[in-house]
Every structure is written in structure tokens, then in C-alpha cells.
Amino acid sequence: VYAEASLLKLRSSEIEQKLNELAMTIGGPSALPVDDAARSLPSDHLYMGSEFSASLAPEYFHSRAATIYGGTSEVQRNIVAKTVLGL
Image (cartoon, rainbow, N blue to C red; front, side, top):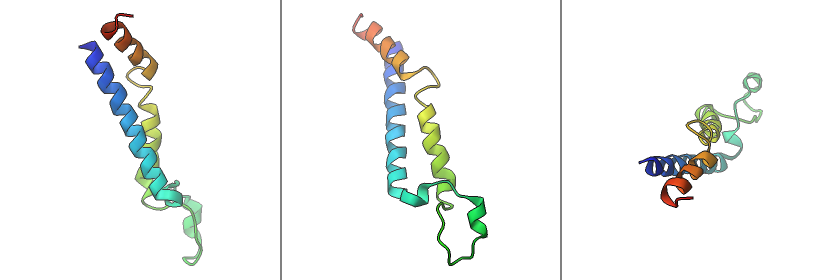
């Protein structure tokens, strides 16, 4: 039971990170956090960030923490090694 839960946690956090990395890559400059000061610029000025990034950037940073909370990935790998491989 412990090995399955550890493997699921490992894979799900890795997949979450990869998907968020892909979203940030696709978003390009629009994926950067919105600079509220830039919103005051005239509309003909280009600025980094968008409403799209309001949800994308926090998700990206949250996915980084996913490998830490609930036990670091290294701890999860050790659990798998001990229970499955008997190491």
C-alpha cells in the first residue's frame, strides 16, 4: 500500500510540473505575472503579463512545491525502494 501511494504521489507531482512548464512555455511572455503598474500605461504601449497569467503563474509555482509537501520526492523514492525492492 505504501509503495503504491508513494508512486502515485511521485508521478502526479512530476506530471503536474511538466504540464505547468508546458503551459508557461506556450504562454511565452504572456505567462509572466501581471505588473499592475504597467496597466496604467496607455493602451498603445506593450507590457508583459496578462489576465491569463493571473492563474497560470501561481499554478506553476504551486507545482514546484508539490514535490515537497506530502514528503519530498526523495523520501517517496526511498519508501518505494524499501517496500518494493527490499533495499
